[in-house]
Image (cartoon, rainbow, N blue to C red; front, side, top):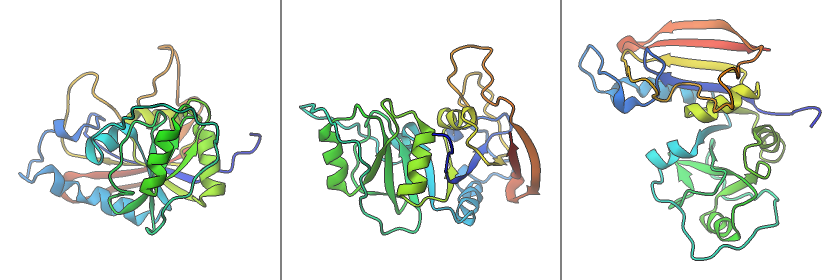
Length: 241
């Protein structure tokens, strides 16, 4: 793919002061408010981007939306790798990276937004039938479902996604970082600490060696810095490569 047409991608995250993502582990704010109340501004800012879609990973989805795994008594090999367009009645879409087809859906919406699944070519016909029956759109990102450049190209051309908000977790953020696909980083620093070594961070690229540098030659330009309510600081960086 010589020229990559892709959405404009903003990685929008909220982390603790030490860069961690598991909000269940964050210390509480000094003012005694709970995390859900303090973090409302995260979703307000996400909406203010007026993006065509958000993208989240499988682990995030199974933790917060659809807990049950997909199971089937049979496996039929699929050889039709055309994209499928399901229901579309929401202004914004939720794109879910689920390369192995692990999620069992009970609705075609996540937070009121229609779903597009990014799959690998090993998923079964039974799983595709499940998505079709639920009215869920899908596309294939190469054999293993990890070719995110291809996925972005398809989203841009076949689903008319021109602006996308990447909302993690850390592993999928790391994959986008490695491929130099992120245009902006919108980082909201929550006034709390996790503190545990090994907890998920904003970018967790699963590289092959300790010498690997997923940020490569990319640099960050600070373009906005704003204190928000309850001790949150909002930083916006532009990526250069």
